[in-house]
Every structure is written in C-alpha cells, then in structure tokens.
Amino acid sequence: MRKLKSNVLIKLLLVMVCSSSLAAERDFTIVQLDEFEWDENSTEIQRQNIYSSPDQEGFYVYRVRFPEGGSTMPHSHSMERHVTVIEGTWYAGADASHDMNRATPITPGGFMIHPPGAVHFDGAIDGYVVVEIKGIGPVTTTEVEIER
Image 1 (cartoon, rainbow, N blue to C red):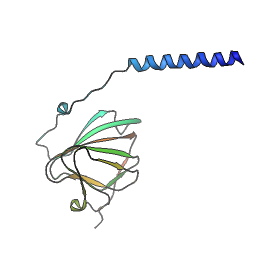
Image 2: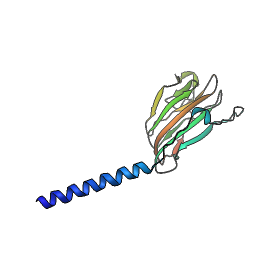
Image 3: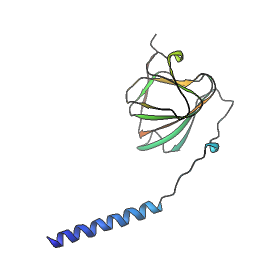
Image 4: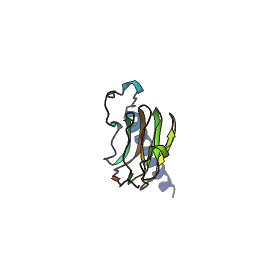
C-alpha cells in the first residue's frame, strides 16, 4: 500500500511539474484598443478576430464594429455567446421583428448572453458601435425571416 501511495505521489508531482513548465512556455497576448484598425467610412459591419474563430473548435474572441444604422437580420446561434459593449450604444432585440425601436440599448461595459437557439437581432442606431463576442466553437448561425 505504501508503494502504491508513493507511486501516485510521484506521478502527481510529475504532472504538476510538466503542467507548470507548459504554462511557462505560453506567451501572453495583449491587444490594446487603439490597435484595432476599422474602416471609419465603411457602411458594412466589420469583424476582427482576437483569439481563434467561431468556425473553429474551442474558445474564441472577436470584435464587431457596426456603422451608424447598421444591424444584423434576425438570427440564432447553435452555441451560447457572450457579448460586451466596448464603444457606443448597442441595440439588442430578442425576437425576429427587426424593430430597432423595440431593441434594448446597452452602453459601454454592458453585457448580454445569447442563449443557443434564441432568435435575436442587433446593431447601431445613433453612431457606430463596437462589441466583443466570446464563446466556444464551432458555431453555426441561422438567419430567420422577419416577423411582421
């Protein structure tokens, strides 16, 4: 029994040493707000990946810039997504109406979770907006028809 305990202890120590040396080999990733280069004149929704991509397996982070008046059509995602407003006021609707007047305004620092399968739309009304989206991929997005 003592030999078994000492073997388990040795294996545990080896795992701890290997794990800490692997962690020490990773580099930190730092992205400053002013490093994002957006096309200020674009009337299109722009996206920049920060870490990985929603098309790939695992955790991802990206930012989206909505121009003034730009919005997504009603849609849903296969996986949960976490959204934080970085700049501007983001408007989020939790149905398929695409009625921006009924959408909830979320200001910088505000946060929203999109549950999997929940239909929603979002965008900017008065000025541009930048949001950060995080989740676990791969994710599929399904557009739905606007409800009238």
